[in-house]
Image 1 (cartoon, rainbow, N blue to C red):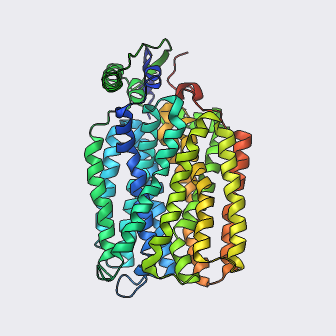
Image 2 (image 1 turned 90 degrees about the vertical axis):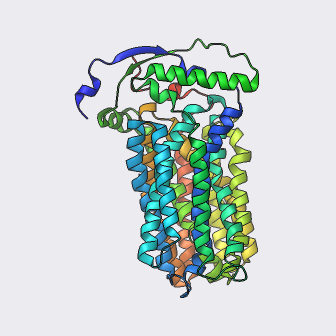
Image 3 (image 1 turned 180 degrees about the vertical axis):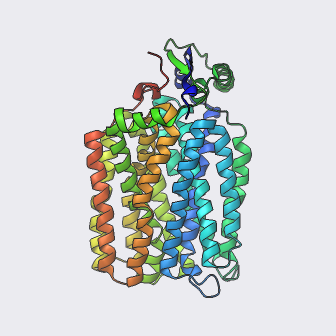
Length: 482
């Protein structure tokens, strides 16, 4: 980036962050949650559809995929998500939140539609790559926009609940698979294709709703568009005031920022690996451990049921429903505690507890001491806690870095951590399941458990007390004057 980007920046004093943080909860905030948070529903739907149909895709009447190929397809999806996060993350910080969260959803829509028309492992893998590419871009654009629009006092609960909505998509995918994979309703090579059409249909509706979500005023005020930021905030205040009937007093807190058209990589790298290096280690550990924990287990859960418990592939959805419920209820019910009790104690305890419980449950699995129903019940309890912790990992990398680097920080840590934990996990577990050896699979469970415990310990040492704090107080903007 040329040094011209920093020539003679204009310093302005603004109260935009304080005005956004003091807003009462309203219908407008629910619109933001619905329009932006729905990306996790789509991701949950995608992952579950693939997980539920894993057994069907191995049938010679469909794509005839081997367990290794199904695991590889899961890894390819993650690779796409990693690259999408990096590319779109940079573009989100450069060109704004709104432009990118419309583009990334469009990429997803085209790719998931294409998945339904694949006829070989190669075309299936390509379609999965670009589906992940769009979803990865969504993570960066959406997380940054949500945190910048939601009041500080409820940011933790809202962020966790939205990330937990992944499991609404999981439940929809599981329920749909029960019907779609039933040969009484559809031919074996037809039902799974219709499943991907569900995601495309939802994406069209979400795309329409997102038109009404404004650009982040925080992004506008740091990119030379103070007048636009003022207009957007004023429009939001009128909408909120009209719907709640509350009188909105002007806050006294202001911040001075040096407005720039763009932020180069130099200040970003200096912030992430210099001043905030401890937070970088924390973000990587939290993201990497939960990525391995989730992707390794969930991408191959259907194979565990069909190969070890001999569950009919068409019935896998019934087992995913309670699993999804536990994952959704965790962030929803525990989320408020992350704002009240605090980030450090809640993140560390959910990580460590879920790791210990997975190790114990994995041992029972190796001893063939539990049934498929009992395995599902135990994992539902484990992931009740793990889901809250994993959702808080995304919140951590979003709220603890300067606003100018927010989307790129999310993308960077998502990419690095998911690359380390998410790409290897599905492939490794797919190979272990293919061996038919429970003891080998238990080694994978122990790795996942150990990483979660390590993530929890890292939070104890390096965690940030960001609860109910303005984003600008948690991390000073790079453009802050003085």
